[in-house]
Amino acid sequence: MQVKRHALLSPSVGTQRELLSFHYGLPGRGEKVYLQASLHADELPGMLVLHHLKQKLAGLEARGELLGEVVVVPVANPIGLNQTLMHGQLGRFDFASGENFNRQYPDFLALLGEQIASRLGQDGEANKRAIRAAMGEALAAIQPTTELASLRHTLVSLAYDADVVLDLHCDFDAVLHVYTETPYIEQAEPLNRYLGARAVLLAKGSGGASFDEALSGHWWRLAEQYAGRFPIPLACLSATVELRGETDVYHHLAEQDAANLLAFLQHRGVLAGTAPALPEPACQPTPLAGSETLRAPHAGVVAFLKQPGDYVEAGEVVADVIDPLSDRVSPVLAGVSGVLYARGIVRYATAGMDLCKVAGKVAFRSGNLLSA
Ligand SMILES: [Zn+2]
Image (cartoon, rainbow, N blue to C red):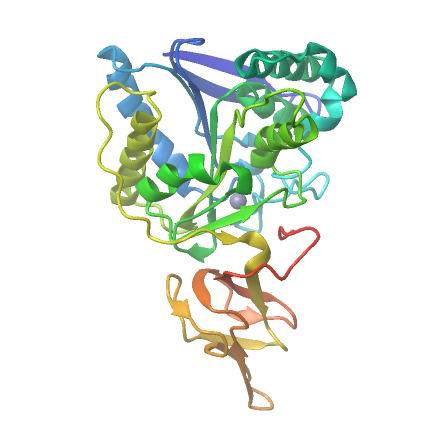
């Protein structure tokens, strides 16, 4: 195992942060898998999962059972990790710019441009190598000018040539769910089944330039753009794994999640031996555009009637919002049928506040599909 330290751009005199990556196995041997946790720095279940995974990987490497390369970044956001305001940790948005740490990653389709065609031919594997080489060149030409930009650049530079990228997040209060891009549905299925995902949300570009889609999106876009001219593989299965809710930080869950991730790696051929039998799927994938966010119709106290993981029918009451001055009680009804996969943790709603999300089967939204 190799530890690499990556200095981030210093934002201020006398201040210097660094990012640490842990490299198991040998580069160029088998598949490369990249895992990171806590890009939203206050989402901590993944950090504990990667702590447990690191111990397991060290043992596997020592026994010669690692057939590929695994790169682990357990603390993907040292900037956000140190953002505390009045005793509350705020790790989703950068204090300096207000930007979401999981937005504004590079658009490789634009960076590669039309000139990539001159490097492509009839061999899909060769095209994969040529595209990755061009991605590496494009990244090397970028000079970040802020600490946040240097963090994003460092993370993408570690992950851009991986076959599998898993970005471990969590929601406020949720069951385990996964976001990935529709063209990768077959590659993602074993991951979803080993993890026991209760919702799988699919989109072809959700519009936020998130980390996961920056690494997977240009492959299917290039494949569509050059269909009939050059074969281009779906070379990077990238997924955002939401490891339940923000307080679901327990050894027993993290150990099980780490074991499930290893089962998936074994299934991909990154670990020696036969992978455990695939569990039955705990859900069927649904379109991200079919996910309904229920909102408070007015301000008040929120009393939920449904829990994360509950299946709700359209028209069912999911929560009441109560104004204790007027004694107005407003039931909040699900507009679609599906699993209530995530809900908020705050029990006082301002008017219009997001309350919870239901994974409906039929797409009805368009435009940017991600929350702020
Ligand atoms: Zn997150």
